[in-house]
Structure formats: structure tokens, C-alpha cells
Amino acid sequence: MSSPLFDLTGRTAAVLGGTSTLGSVMAEALLDHGAQVALVVRSKEQAELKLATLLDTGRAALFQADAAVKADLVRVQEEIAAWSASGRTDILLHAAGTNSATPFFEITEDEFDRIMDVNAKSVMLACQVFGKAMIDAGQGGSIITISSVSSGPPLSRVFTYSASKHAVNSMTQFLAREFAPHGVRVNAIVPGFFPAEQNRAILSPERVASIMGHTPMKRFGDPKELQGAVVWLASEAASGYVTGSLIRVDGGFGAMTI
Image 1 (cartoon, rainbow, N blue to C red):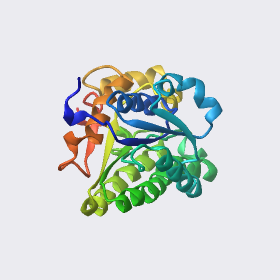
Image 2: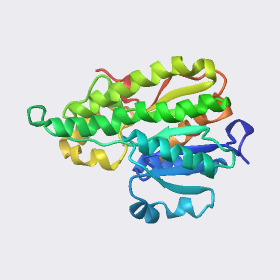
Image 3: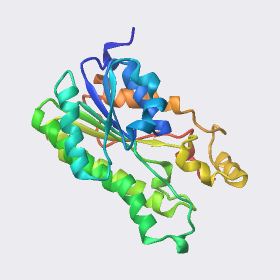
């Protein structure tokens, strides 16, 4: 039996980007520790098979929304509150994301806007909608964003992605200060290199060698290695004084220079 510090029974988590490699694995951990989990996806049809194991628990459900459209988020927040046993959302995990390795001079405005919308604007919108609902409910809450080691210093080849994740760090810390008087904590997990769909396109043999040379553990992360961090940030174990933190889970990548 898990420690009461990490028991999420009675809490409802909304996971934006529930079908992503990292989002689905972190959602699994929230379920394993007792939470109800609302999996917010762009297409229910595509998600049903991929997330069948989570849905079979009976404590997870699919909700459809475009994370970059505020009207969708307002609607889905209301739907989740109606579905939730607690009548509210206690935890928001923002795991929606996209990437591109387009060379800088070839980046179009449409591509730049698309990546910024998914990775950054959607964080602002989700925090406006779910953060406001948490504050209005008066029960506190935990907002967890997903940043990246590319947030600073920026990685080569992923200009827009790096800029968007730097924005996530800034928003996370700004909102931690803004929401603190209301008992709503805002923290970011900063993953290193995990086999997520959005970074496969840039993992050439040369790129892999470069990453391994800068990662003290000399390996990629397993998505399950993010589970401890997300449960901790969502739980009573972190509820007292952890906010505005950027928690690295990167195999030592951020500690390396030469």
C-alpha cells in the first residue's frame, strides 16, 4: 500500500495530451495512486485503443478538446467537473506538445505558430481555465507543466520548440507566484531525452552520439521514470511548499558542461 503522502484517492486529474508517450505513462501513475483521470485528447476515436488499459480501470474517461482553443477548454473543464466524484479538477497535467527540426531559415510562420500554439499558448489557456476553476473552488490544486532540457540553454535544430519550452518555464514560475495565495501550486517537470514521438525525427545516429556525450547516465530515459516526479508534485508530499520549481528528470544532462 502506498504512503498516505502519495495517495491521490478522491482527487481528479485532467491530463491534456493524454495520448502522448509521456502523458499516457504519467496518467497511468496518477491512476495507480488513486486519482480519477480525465484524459483530454483531440480525437476520441484514435485514443480509445491506445488508452484502453487506462480506461479499463473504470476511473479514467476520455474527453475531447483542442488544447489551443479556449472555448474547448472551458467546455471540457465543465464536463470534467460534472464527471468528477469531487465535482472539480484538483490536478492539471499539461502534457500536450509537438516538435519540428526544420532549419531556421526554412521555418514558416504557420509552423512557428502551430508549435507555439500547442506548446505555449495552450499552457496559458489551460491555466486560465483550470487555474481559475481551482481558485474558485477554494480547495487548492496542483498544476504540472511539461518543459524540456531544450528550454535553456536551447538545443540546436529545434528553434521553435526550444523557444516554446523556455516560455513554459517562464509561465510556470509566473503563475506559481500568482496562484500561491490561493493554495494552487504550479511546477514544471523538465524531461531529458525520452523516446517520445515528437523527438524521433531529430534522432539521427550523430544526434544520439551527441546526446549521450552530454548525458552522464549515457542512456535515454524510460517514460516510467517520470512517474515518481508527477505523483510527488500532485500529492500531499509536495503540497506544503513546492511551487515555482523546475524539476529535472534528465539523466544529468543539465549538470554537464565539459
